[in-house]
Length: 111
Length: 284
Image (cartoon, rainbow over all chains, first blue to last red; front, side, top):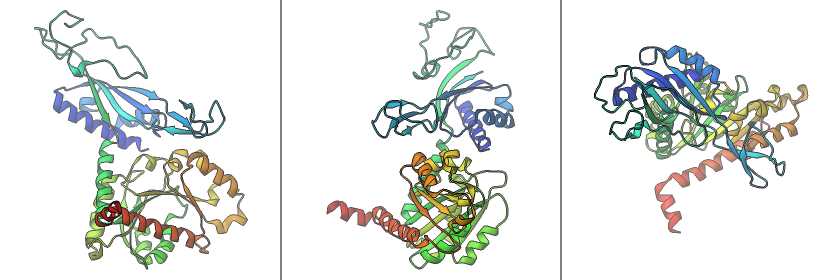
């Protein structure tokens, strides 16, 4: 549900950028979402409809998921974590997540 | 030279196509570089702009300002999170009695509607400020900053930097508040025994970001199927750093241990955030 706050912030940031870089329409917003960012892509897309006007009238959301990396607390092995709670492939101990909480706009395609 | 149409404009920084090494994707465009002058007009030409706009950056800035403010006012700030009905307000009522003999207790109450919780807190003897979030499912750092200013402005002792505890009772929700830093010093997650011992595994984000976990309503243990050992293991799995307390706000069981910890932790925080004190410590 906090996706509503996130899309409002997204709109505010894009409007700021529009004033700075002189564009009037956004064709695409590229977003990076960490797999541990507690953001649902479907909810984000649904919430985005509530800010779809003006600059963002015909905007396509291009969402890229970034898998969280983890470090085993036992043997220190670094690996991509496929699940929020994962065991180390080498020793079976618990993986501790590092990052994966990204939520940022990386690129705008504008007119 | 521009590789697409052969004009001499260099590729501007904002037109770089790289996003980092973790993914690649292609885009089809008639013109790749719209910003430079082609000598003819393309009104519908698409420009690509590389940016780095963090959706939480604004909240994080407010949170950092709050953290500085709390330090200056010597407020030990605790962000209390849980599902609805885990017993946050009842725990606070009991804590106010135990802590207010040591220092002032301030409480910010976040609820969708009503000032019922703030009324309870005021009745218990603390200074409270209610935030009604309406449709919002979480508190953010901006709301909290304003409320703390109002709350402490009304109190003489806080303006004299006497400090105390600031509890921010977040909206009852185990998902959304996890992402929003409020500038707190400690995050406390509550989990009542009626909710089940597997809750930390089902809602890992909230527990993973918590420093303290209070297992509440332990007076109900005889009546519910709740395995304390299993729950502690679940907490250790998602939040190995968390300090765990077992408490009944109703009978008072376990309360002293937690309150003693809070008193000691606040003294340490105060010593670390007092400029004079930390200067003398580093000199020694």
